Amino acid sequence: MSKCVLIVDDEEDVRSIAKLGLEMGANWQVLTASSGKEALNIAQTNKPDIILLDLMMPDWDGRITLEQLKADPQTQHIPVILMTAKNQSSAEARLVGLEVAAIFTKPFRPLQLSEQITAVLENLT
Image (cartoon, rainbow, N blue to C red; front, side, top):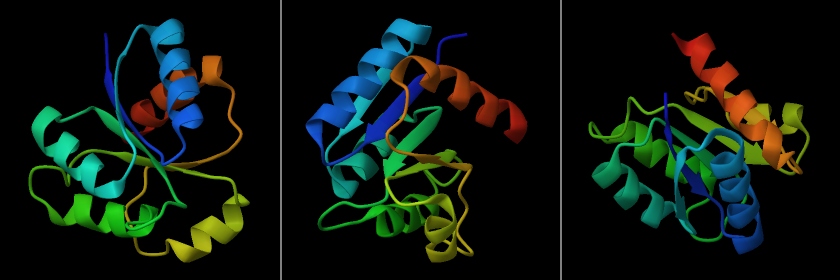
C-alpha cells in the first residue's frame, strides 16, 4: 500500500535525497517542508501517514515542531520519526516525555529508508 510521507529538513539536499529514495524504493508520495511552520501547515492539509523530522533547524527546531504537531488535534495522531546527526542517546535525552515513533541517525541510506519507516509503522500497530 502506498504511503504519504512528509520530510521536514532545512537542508534541501537531505530532502531531495530522502524524497528520491522513498519514491524509488517504495513509490510513496513524498511531501517536503523546509521549516517547522511549513511542516505544520502541510501536515494539517495533507494528513501524511508519517513525518520525518529533522531535529536541528532554525526558527522552530525539531522539538518545537514536534510539540506543535502533537498539540494540534488535526496532526497529533501522525507518527513522527526524528532525524538527527547527533548520536541517538543525546537526542533521546533531549526528547524525554515527547511522543516520538523512532529516531534515525543521519546520514541515512536513501534506498533503505522505506524499509526502516515500514518497520516503525508496523511496530506502532
